[in-house]
Length: 96
Image 1 (spheres, one colour):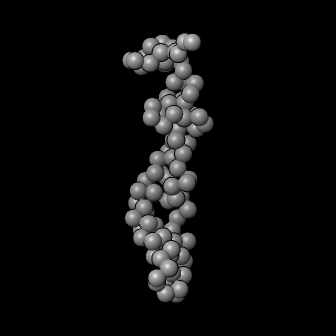
Image 2 (tube, rainbow, N blue to C red):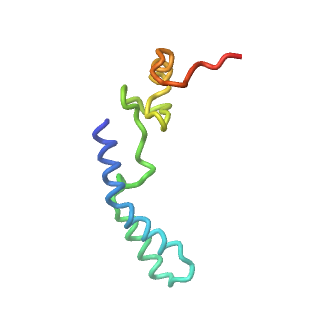
Image 3 (cartoon, rainbow, N blue to C red):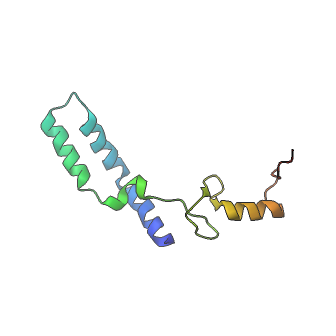
């Protein structure tokens, strides 16, 4: 799965500027309807894998896709394990 995620991120970076330009044309109310329709059709021809909504964060240790902390790029399970070992400086379990 790590390769698929890498491929999706690469596709997104490749098609991002084209997708944004077509989206700007398609949503501009001041342009003719035929031009806006053409932009929408061109946007629909782009690869589906190049959409940002298809990119998922994965844990860099376990490759787990659920409950990933984006700042650390770790799943909550790995983060908890490493934090309890003291791997993160300045981070400790809060006590009341």
